[in-house]
Image (cartoon, rainbow over the protein chains, first blue to last red):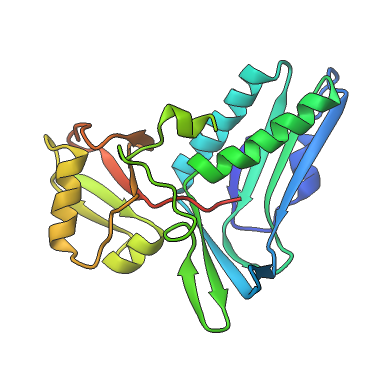
Length: 154
Length: 77
């Protein structure tokens, strides 16, 4: 399973191992971690929640998009759910390709797409309250009720 | 019957992870209206909809047994 939602801490090396291939000249690894300060506001911890079966499907879709765009790519993505403390690993993306430029580009593409189409939400807990992120300032409006083609390809 | 799932702020507003409702033969827009009438504190603005784990439009038809999920703007990563 190259695409997974995990309730347990993510083993980074295991994600990397999934994309090892003889044809690859590069593996890039993105590790998303929980940041303490956002716009000066101190986060105590986060809760991540996922619509798990759909989230796995959408991670796989992102992997397939990458394979279409970057020839010879292999992709593995694991996203954590549950309570995460500051510095904990929230997501690991590994991409291998024959040449390094593609591995960097494709990995960047994956994290941006995760933020667009994968049904995962984070709830920020601060000293003075809590809020689901994505419902206010970071809102992206989808007038037709789903992402348009243009939303999906930046 | 149809299972209707709520996530993030919608789950807090509805107070349930899911409800069971008969929405077959109706559109996503119809279902949204039904939910808004039943749960007055719910805000479906900017909320996407999935039918059987795939993004759907407001004018898509809901069939018997389909699973519907209301998906607020996502914030993973």
